[in-house]
Length: 421
Image 1: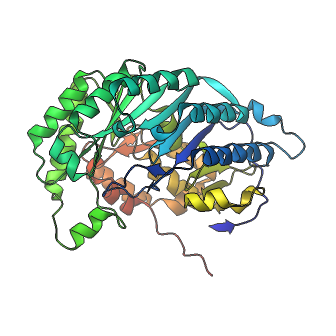
Image 2 (image 1 turned 60 degrees about the vertical axis):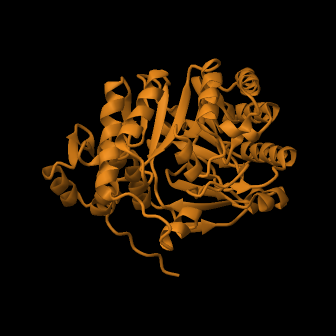
Image 3 (image 1 turned 180 degrees about the horizontal axis):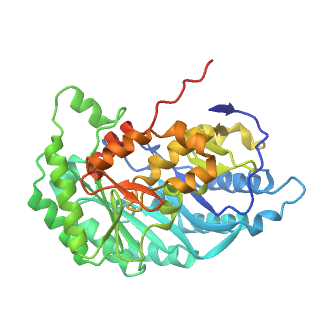
């Protein structure tokens, strides 16, 4: 992987559908399980949005987005798939700030007919149900058509353990307000908490399914380095659930939600038919996306087919204070070679029920790159063991293999050479 810390940004292959991710880095408080780029503190909203808009302008004018330096209008032909506001807690933003960003993104290409605009929201962003309903009404007017609510649980004790500042009543009222405005509402929930019972988890899933939410994201509690939970577990304050319990929760989630009419289209994501998150599907299938805002990552395809990994400086203060132009002062890039690109594509697409399209990857990156990236005898072995299923175009995890995704990836992805300094 070659690092490019140059203000000069390479030209992209035109015509590739593009998604846009905007990161909002502030929360009211830092949750003990969270390893995202989120910071408790007072947001600098107006300055931050001004910086975002400035970056969109530069992206449009730079060769990252435009076909060439002399053709700043070429971007208008680029199909726009989605815009996703993640965080952090984007619902701390004023709706007019969100509207400004949506308007700026419109200049990066041509929105497809099903252009998806998602905002992640937290129940603690609202002082009352009326306040939440008003905010969602304003988001709808601004052009948002999907919201994701981080309720995380429906048990006050569990919410307290997770460091959430809302209670069950707050969570349900926020869902009520969102569903009164939007057809496409997601709820994020977490399982595998110490002391959590299968009955309690089943009750939560049935409650949310009974609300006919378009989408549910059910994540296993993981202990990430550099989080408060990691420090607590390391010193023995509490013990995570064992692997058998994790597997039971996973299987319960899978079977119960499917019985309730949800499609398990990705390892942790369930939707009503036709309601999969278009933004995430685009990314998991290897599509181009521009990441803007402190700590945002992106993936873009260059004219020669090379994949470009991008990342923005992580600290909000550094993002706000960086000199502009040039965009390269905050936008670090690295070229991925073909073998790295194949492995990254498999890492993402194996999470999907549709699995890996081996034929497409060979055509896109070459047979030799695929062979260098994938241990095909290991794939055959895991098929024989029932952890992978064959597909006309490649392979996918079986029902037995889904809980063992990390193990499967370790087996089928070949070690890559370490770059020489």
